[in-house]
Length: 428
Ligand SMILES: *Cc1c(COP(=O)(O)O)cnc(C)c1O
Image 1 (cartoon, rainbow, N blue to C red):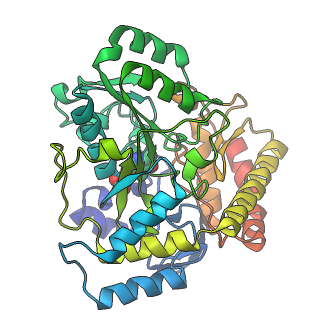
Image 2 (spheres, rainbow, N blue to C red):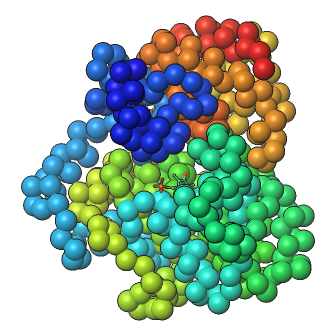
């Protein structure tokens, strides 16, 4: 594997096609995957239980036979047409059926495209430029969102990226997450200039940071008063936390986002993503409206087939299984860490969780960053040695699938005491 990484680094910057895969924050060589099945990934010489799940898409487990069969069948009919298909209509209807605020939807190929287009659409629709985002929230790698972003960006401690023109980010305002006062102050002074707030359904790219109860509803209320739009970025949480994503489990104080973005689970591992929401806003997209967006491979038939099959299979039983397994896993990790006296908090929203190495729960990025980050690398490597593949960064959530049965969870937890000891012995 180290050999393959050396070969990769000679021809691909950092040896990887997406930065966090490079193990930069935990050290060592990444696992090069040959194949995957259910809860497992396989390198050339080893089986691992996987808790990355392709960073979210693998809700049903890797290579679910029915999904693979649907993709194979679609492939035999042609790989891409550049013309509309019935399958796109079917997937659109499935999403609209599950997620009430979605009246119309457009498919793109990546989550980045989805949020980029949602922001352009909000700006076009409102005729305003300012977009509000929260520190530690990741919305993809488009220029105007690479300010205080999470995910790989958080890992590498970049506050933004080189190559992003100053002018591009001048219209992005970054606020601390869960801070209502900061939002109110901004809207009181600049409300009439704000096109949209974009926020993760529940932040999970700085580790998991749950919104305080009613926070998303509060954001919608602020937007509505100011004539701005709320974009709920459910690229990670959509169809993972429930059939209707985070929005579906976040209705104690009811709210309706104006736009939502999807990715990851919606394609079950194939490159497809989407933006959807209010029909009167969505109709501002070309060819009906003046906001341009396009894509050679948008609504690709293989990706669409994977999406339709994944959503159809993601029934109540799947969500119950994932919730139960995720709870058992975080309980077990927590017990192991407590036994070794390691300060920690399980940060959780629905089935998504991460371990924060601090005994004070984190409500925003600064609090996440203040944890004992140095405990993660030894924890991670102890588990990797024992055949458990965790996300290679303390700033990422753990992804459980419906194939992570009790037996699989027990195997992971058998390795937890040793990992907890490694975390306890770590020094800054
Ligand atoms: C992954 C992610 C994106 C970007 O999606 P890509 O498909 O990687 O471009 C955007 N928003 C959120 C919340 C994500 O988790």
